[in-house]
Length: 537
Image (tube, rainbow, N blue to C red):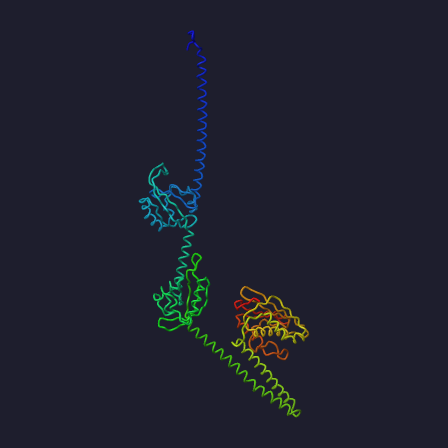
């Protein structure tokens, strides 16, 4: 380049300007490269993190994963599958998959294996693996695809099988248990002599067991699909419908007696127990069991009638026997008065023994009459506070309590029940009187009456500080006319505790004693079940 005077500019200035321009471009390019490299490094870190996350998900997934070659060689697997067999990944890699199957399972798997490659859809097979951890029941879900893979020698390409392995050992165990339970239930249903049945919410029989004909006289196919109402005799229909409504509300019913019409139009008595059949929280019907109790009911009716007749006989005989005894006693007294002092001491002793025997026999008959009256249907039944019956019994015993200066202690809350008031008064009276009577000479009686509640019963105790009882003789206490003490030392007829036992057992309870022997006192216990119509007062 030249000036206007045709002189030339120096070349140094031009070169400097070009160099500056080039330097700026290189710097910018280097900065851009740094940004791109940083982005690449960041992307690489993200990719590595994603790869690591995928590897963790793959290795520790709840399911095992396998890649098998077309010949069944394990090419790849995750840690979960290795853990199923109790082996390491390196132990399993490039090993034949069938090595870990039993002989029978191996034949089945090899027969099915080619089919996994013939369809793009997933296929399933259940089998049992063998490993260091024992037998593992699994479900295999497989899909084939074309992929590159590494063989022991080189990288190859081909069709492989991707398998998801789901451990169903627990499910298999539960299925086995369910099948066993169903089989046991089937055997029970098919062999029991009771009728087992199911009825839906519309009162229709949906199932009846094979014993149905022998129980109610109808064939299974005659009643399944029909309403149970047609089997109920008119006198039991109201009871049956009320029970059906209760069960549909979710209440179970035990031992319901119903009159059933048989196919030959005769009637039988069956005992039925039913429970609601619940699905998804709703009652959809009922299931139950029925038993022909006609024979048993007849026997029970006969026994009840026989017991009633026996009680009436015992009452009548006991009542009638008192008149001759009174006559014997009266004539003995007249004889002793007439003879006066003209008889020997021996004769006088004989008359005394005869009179005493007649009096004692009369007392025994009175006790027997009292025993026979326990449980008679004529006894009034009502809501009774047991504390009130105890107080009434203590009122009757007040003279003996005052005479002996006895200490009476009462503990606990006493419930109320629907039962016979007179019988409960007699029960407490006999037990407390026992503690007042059987005391060593000179000892002041101390009697403690306690009431306490248990899960199923109310438990009452009457504890005294009396002469005690030999534990080996305790079983005799509640027998009629059984005495453990001399009549000369302690009066009584040996019926009081037998009456106590009869009263308690009549109300479904139990009575027993506890004593550590002579001189250690006695505790009488008795129970009344909570099911005896308890009432809160």
